[in-house]
Image 1 (cartoon, rainbow, N blue to C red):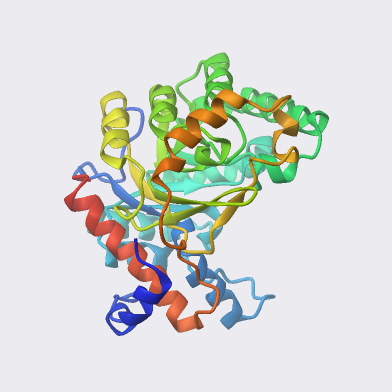
Image 2: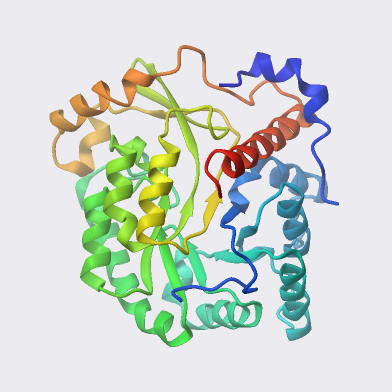
Length: 360
């Protein structure tokens, strides 16, 4: 695992990273490879871009055109792009983006706000853009935070759960009518069995999962078991490797460059590919300080009804036994240039690992 100290020693090398220079089909039939990059892999680039523009600027710091070029410069075969990165709704604009993707033989997926599924007018805008650009897969996350941080009592969790079950159910006819497939991300909200129950209850190929390889570690779930349960419903993915390290109230959790963590990546990729051969694997390498998962506190368990001792023991005897001996990587203390170079290096190294070790 690359530490901050090790990174700084090689900073000059990192600065050489290039700057901008069936169920679902790609924008071009010639695309056969499945490695993409999610826009969430570039939080530092996006933040610094916004700072450079000024926070009141209406222009996205990483427009669709620039993002396609950026992903291509890192060797990806596609993009999972936030819908807000589109800067026009004119047909000529969409034709140009589609041509750009086809020329580079890249696929495109959209990440959209889950609230879009509640608003037919906003959904119609997404559906129109998707049709014109040849996009058929969407990723949504119903919870913007984390279950154990956002909800302080069972009642508020149940309200969230009931609301989004109904929203997803109501959205299915719109998705079907427009030939779109939504992957609901396991965003540190539902346990695997809970999400499967929701998707199975709706029972539509148009509503599935965005299988995030690491998020449910925060809910003390085994990543391989989670992948097996969600694989039949997979629409898209967030490919990531994770590292953990204990602290007094629980453990720290970090995304790290693919191959640097303990996630059984090849096994999970194999499970998902067996169920969904056409699946895209979209890197989500978030370069940031470690997240804290305080599972030893009472508050963590409020929305689960009671502390699950068997889940705790199993997690501690498997995942936590692979804890990092070194402090997890941080960006605190890095200059803007060093932080950006660290982010770029994580994405670059992850792409190389995805191509070579995972054959994506």
